[in-house]
Image: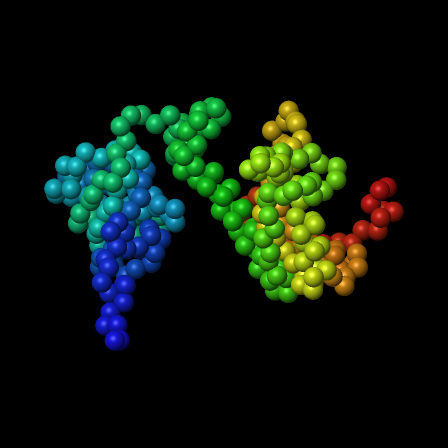
Length: 286
């Protein structure tokens, strides 16, 4: 029996049909359903303007008539259905959403200890205690976006260079690298350790004939410290390759750095690395 319809034909999205950025790309008059957090509210006579924010971006929404009555506030989570309207003076791209309906999905019951707009600063301890609110701040979100883009650029580069991605274990039976302390964990009736490095597994894969392997994942170092610059758990991007010498390794690493910084060059804090100069050892130590 041949199917007569698809999932998209029979299931309507419950909370949203578009992300905010996708909705803003639609033509004027297009009906869309978006969802997110209310960042600001401004009332002008019998019209209420809200700035709605989701992970993709922000948009101005216009509420009129019976939609003025719902009790909403900053950082309320709402689902809003409306029509795209081109309004050159509207912030965030010259388009706004004229609302036809609004549903409150999550209300704010007390004042927030962390301001997601960053207009009111908060102490670090407060930010960490309410990390989920801190993550809503644009400058914090950018850190996660940059990290995601860096990992993607590394993986794309490694794939283009013929590398196979492997996934070594994080719980191992013995230390995987000398010179670094291990975290010991209870593994049923035995002792085990959190991996300090994927080195052994990468080398086994290369010797096993995969020739070029890469991994991106956590490594753990049980080294006591008293600075905020030291991490006991990091995400490591690794490569291991057969049939190359030190020059080949340098070319791979510089290529990876160029690919990553090029991907991140739209951030003002990052300059793309191109044509990295070669420095002889004797010159480097002078």
